[in-house]
Image (tube, rainbow over the protein chains, first blue to last red):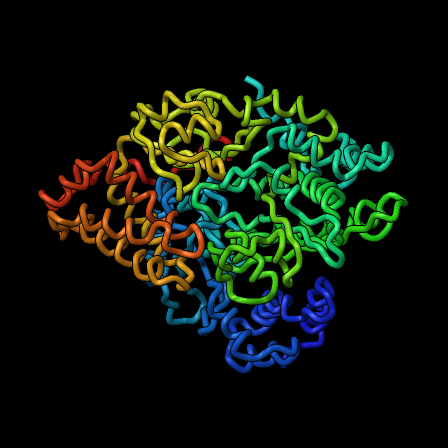
Length: 158
Length: 439
């Protein structure tokens, strides 16, 4: 269900916790599974739960509670723009509007070619870098002017 | 004015996060001092108490006192947790501490573990700063290889294992008991207190949780003495504090200054109000802290007691600056949406109440407000506050109460005229994309 490489990475997470507390590794394990699969289908979550000896519903509760896990399919690149107040004061909303217009989609939509999904984010803890956005959860892009957004989208589209 | 005296001192260059660089800056000398001079755990806690260090995450609780609550003699596992789940809108200091000076946190945690008899610890890092989490993992590997972590630290029988745990997008996990649940691999819903974490924490074992900046301050207290740290600030407000300044300023960013520094000096450091416009309001301690109008704020010094006296909270030290182009109804609408989105859903007053707050502020902002709405907002906040397991309900309510209290006429204008007091083009100009000179 998951590659040997992903399982090895999950084992590294498991080793951080006492042997009888494997469930603690579920956040790391779901993240690793999502990196491999692109999103978390029910069967992926079930697999992770079994691997960690926990109830599938407990793993699903985690996957559905934390908003960086995608329990619905997303485009190849997920772009999450922070529009919270500190970012909004420095152009966060303008940056989001610019991306919407460039991609022709609204928040929570995916482009017809399946390349881009756009999300509205809550505070990423980088308000001094506004406008801030995340690409595929792990790459933070700071000070996103229209020129930098153009460049980013062009690079991702390659 | 002195800036960047302690945690941010000497952080120029691109390898400041490496062990080698940290040691060259005097790093791990506090840990070595404790080991070499055989300073007792009780004396370490006494020194931290003397320093007047207060929790840098938001609540401002005296750190030394918190450490003394740990049942040191309790047989069995005891845990230490670092709260780096920095998601309070406006706050971005822990990210920079971990990016540029992660070993200061590792050293601070190791000293804390020694003082409280903890054998294992976790640093819970905000999921959105994943590159910082990865870097912290590297710093941990360096510290283990050099004998600053693990079994037999610096050749003694003192052992401490430290690991990194990441969040994945839940503001509530910054609440300490939600963070514990999350470390246990559960959804982050806060626990009822008591029992407090010092008696029932991770896996039901005694646990102490401190903020990243709190731990990073500890090596300085041990090296220079608690009294020196205290004297950097003012009585009851020891040390320096990192303020994250965001919003309408010329140079948004982190500024480490002494507690007690006048707000006007901090504002000047951050480049003053952007574009020569007039200051309108400031949220001095992260989005959960009550907003203060410009005239009150300009009379404040940046410390726990002064901001509290002015009717707000120093909180996490996140200073959100709003100038005259800001519509206060719109600003509150965005914050209220945030709390509505992030309520964990466990307690009815918060789950339902945050939705009410957002919907009512939203309709006022969109010209559908009713004359009774301000009373309704106050009534909803009164029914949330003090009636929930954790502080998120209060955190959602305090912005609403303070915005209505200080800027009530703006809300009334919206309700009566179905539009904003601040013209749309002025708002648009004030909120356009701004990239400061530091970038």
